[in-house]
Image (cartoon, rainbow, N blue to C red; front, side, top):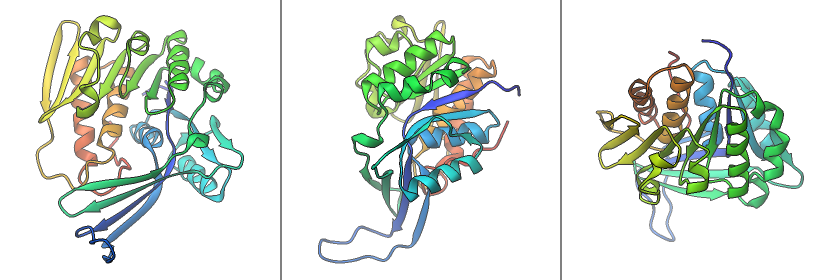
Length: 278
């Protein structure tokens, strides 16, 4: 499998999932039927997935200097993630995402991700040595634009596979090899995305995902079967797509790996991946 390192640049948070039969009416209560608390956030989820697939991975993210941050980083280490480039922000509380999951797979997020736990351009620059040696750089575009651009730029300078996850503008797209967007984000992307620089575009569409690359395209439907929770499916998708490409698989094969990773994720509550290594 080699030792080609993937670097994920994105979000780290405490992820709390509570399951209920249905949301209570205002002024009433409901019993929680299930509860999970774990390392989460889009960046950390992608890093976990990369590690589960057997690829060395580093995470560039921000945690607070609180005890929750201690626990989250300890879990990341157990998961096989290099956390030397995770910033501990003095005086900040670590990010928190609470998912309320109703029966039938309907979910709602409550999140506390204030500015202190978001990446800055300086945070990304401080991870320059790790980024310089990366085979792939996965950039979560829900981070501030300056930090995302710095990560993409450094990935391009390192001749790494640059994967953008989210809504990419023309400037970012020109630095990318791969752009992935979910069904909502895809509506905000430029129509001529492939002409701007990426060699593979993966877009969520009604009923599945459509992949485009120079000289080819394929539509792959969502995996068969009922989904317990779609949270985290996109993170597993992005990680698997990147790992497949790093290992030299052609676009359609990588696309199928990505869709299979979503199938392995949506069958249980929460966004934490549980992928089988290849």
